[in-house]
Length: 286
Picture 1 (cartoon, one colour):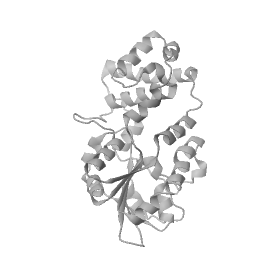
Picture 2: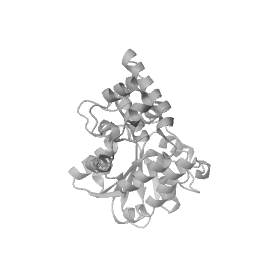
Picture 3: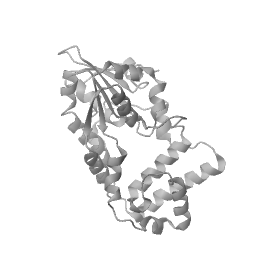
Picture 4: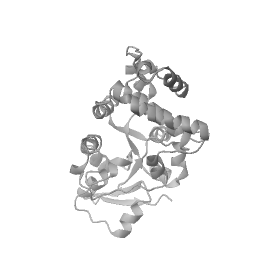
């Protein structure tokens, strides 16, 4: 995010209570918005806070990370050769439970890689256990922003292609082999069995932190101190996105929806826009 911006105590405190930021330029009267999403929550979160749709309605262009279309995501997976690697890794009992959990999945489990299995299992557990989906919900939050944008005839812009995002993710997951994945999968299944038995909410802290507005932006934190994976997933991608965002903001009222982590630290979008002279201020959501 930004180097050298001075955020007063009041603004810093207030900013922790919102994921919506107003962006204005000294060069014109365009007004844009930056919304930090959480990929695992759903459309109900968007509806709960009217300020989000009001901001989107004010804009002409909606920007999201990547176009989310299941057919595009499924295509390369369908071309893979099925294997018994998952079943051989976890054993018959755990494999049966995984099949039960993911029976409605559009994916052939025999064609998935270890990190993909882990991601699907964690997402499904979060859906069941964290009140992320409510009756009538059909979309995760980022996809819903895209659907809503299309329904309102907004221009849509994507910061990455599906292949680019997959490449970033695969680079961070290079160390996950079937052997090393067994521990992660076992932990998720243990959580799932515990939830089945007790019905007690054991929602991961990261989810509750987002829903309760408890994240800290840490705008002055130096990104050189981040882990290599975070540097890749946040800092490097932010640098690429900043080649596009200022031009959009200067020319049109723009609604930008990106994962909340991309707003954090001194290499985040907030600080980078501020460093270019934009006024970036928090907008009350609650």
